[in-house]
Image (cartoon, rainbow, N blue to C red; front, side):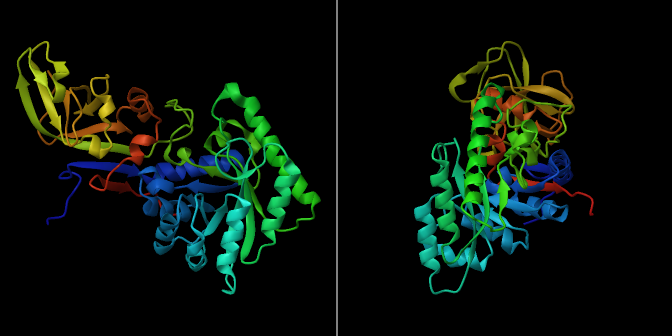
Length: 382
């Protein structure tokens, strides 16, 4: 097959790695701490390997992923900084954790015991970070009330054979909601109390303490400890879903496609499935080579979304199909093959796309399928 170029790709995500490096530096400068970049879900659709290599080359201190397979992918690509698995890895894969030098999150004491037992007699050690449930009520050692008991559990975990406790962390439930700042402060207090109780138990190990997610990095400097975790802000998204064109972050991704056909339709013509849109005048329709299987949500249908074609905003019309979508280009200088910016840099902000689709800003990019090519704009070498 002939090699595809940007001009011949039906749909592609253009990803500016320099924007991600910029966002990394924003977090470093803002916090003065080490930074762990969360690149789970294939870096929210941006491509974990390419993003990870670029961020590591520009000073990222650690990465977080969701599962073992994601961690191994980074190691096989040559990434060497610490990689934390946030989710559950079955104990039977303990040797894979050790072989790939991956750090495993400990979600409860029973799991720690299972992982330790799986390493018995192997002579191998796995680095672990214990997660505290300070108020998210999702995963982690329950730390919302009896802080001494939580600390005792952490202390027991630290003494299990085969496990090397190198970190302790928590996750905030509402750090992006100003009306719930008291709840965030309560969670922070729970975290601090467990750390204090752990000290009083005589724990002397070297551990990395990290509690700040993107929302806490941006809005709660009181939550900084040894390291912060930047998740959506790596990609230029704000965790409260607000679009801030003059803010410090730069969005990295644009979803682009091509005009594949132009149709001249008379007034009274229905467009696409369900006949949900009917032209009220003679209309020039551009058929575009992207649909909901390309992370252009079907929920945008007839909601007021637009694409940028030939430098102009063109309204989306009719139902978004799996592979195609339609836009009103009446009176505009549009031709077959023109580049279409569906959203992101240079187009409709992802925050506005998300609001129309009833979701959050990082979900559309996380749904990018493998048929959407990724084109990277490389950052300058350090």
